[in-house]
Amino acid sequence: MDEDIEALRREVQHLMAMNTAAYLAITSLVATHPNPQQLQLHLIASLEGILGSERIAKWPEDQKAIVRRVMETFQQIQPAGHIDPLASALGDRDPRSQP
Image (tube, rainbow, N blue to C red):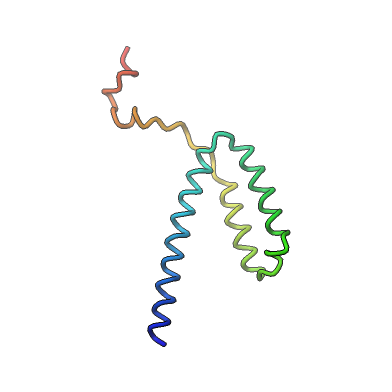
């Protein structure tokens, strides 16, 4: 019995870690999306579509609320500024910044 509980505990920890990693990756994708307004509209439509589906209709209300809160969090992400890895790597040595 203790082994089963420990195995479940490890599985929950792994799921939490995987969920956190996925959340970070999705947050980065949302922040760097080339058309943030279109993405936001798609997120809203997707959320309403999934919450109205037959499959999700069977879920408890607390699970549905989690889906809504996570999606609403993604809708709050502001577009990221331009990232220039070459300029970051070269700093003052970047030949593009030389006159």
